[in-house]
Amino acid sequence: MQSEVELIKRVHINLNGRVGLVTGGASGLGKATVRRFLQSNAKVVICDYNEKISQEVLQELIGEFGPDNVDFIKTDVSDDASMKAAVDFAVERFGSLDILVASAGIGGANNAIADETIDNWNRVNAVDYTGVMLSNKYAIMQFRKQGNGGVIVNLASMFGLVAVPTNVAYSAAKGGVINLTKAAGTAYADEGIRVNCVCPGVVNTPLVPEDQKQAYRNLHPMHRIAEAHEIASIITFLCSDDARFITGAAIPVDGGYTGV
Image (cartoon, rainbow, N blue to C red):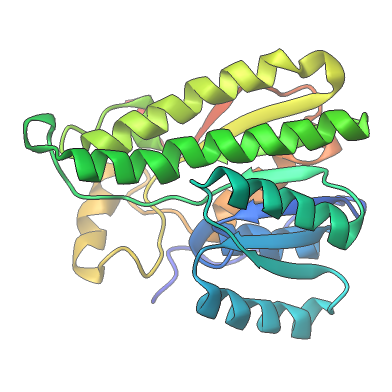
């Protein structure tokens, strides 16, 4: 897979040993965020449903960052008990939970509303919307128990800011994530708990077929799609002290798509 842009040297962000939990952390934006966090002096728990791929990623990261900085727990974000167990595991493993990145998500079937099925609707919303709610709920419960604040970044989409008529379930779920973020980000702001979301454009991952990438490039005013590390950098900034006056925000990272 050819990169859209060169990976350049970045300004270093220090997360100061904080503990982060990343759902969907074994692939795509989640994996890029895990790596960026580890590079930024955080400890990270990878939450993912795919145990085989997660173990491969875990061993790769242990080889690079050491066994004391990263671990994995199999998690179904749409299941209440599973999501609670993931938060508990992070606290048991590393002593606290300071950061949550809710990046687990699926695209579902490309259905306009008249063609939507209840099975597809329920499956997409269970992961992309309920999963975000549950992860936020249990992270915030832990933040409040610790009493020293915390940070959440949810993954929405540019298609949560503007509709995609041909995938009603995904668009509705991501729109819901944006308003959930605003509600959570203001409810506990006076306790030092910040909740924001990023709204990426199309990202250059193996999930995007090569024969479709040019059409996606043409959608964006920059005439390219994003690299996962570009989104991960924004997420890392939002989790840092440099962003401590930002909460309840939905930030487009979409090459200008929602600006026109």
